[in-house]
Image (cartoon, rainbow, N blue to C red; front, side, top):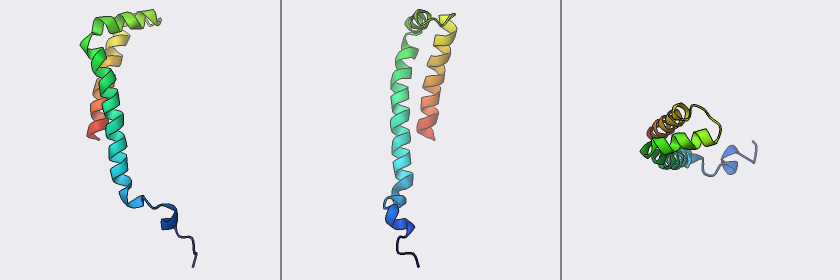
Length: 78
């Protein structure tokens, strides 16, 4: 029998699901925080994208804002 079992290397294996949920919620809330500010002012967001060289800015800015906000909700909900 092997003296070094798998459980000796993974002491937190029992809480893996809880840790993954916490990490998922943290990432989702972070994305939601930044996506929400883009949704609030789509015109300024579009102007920022034009300044970065993405034309048309309204298309890229709106797409990113919607995807970031919707994606954050999907990440939070699992």
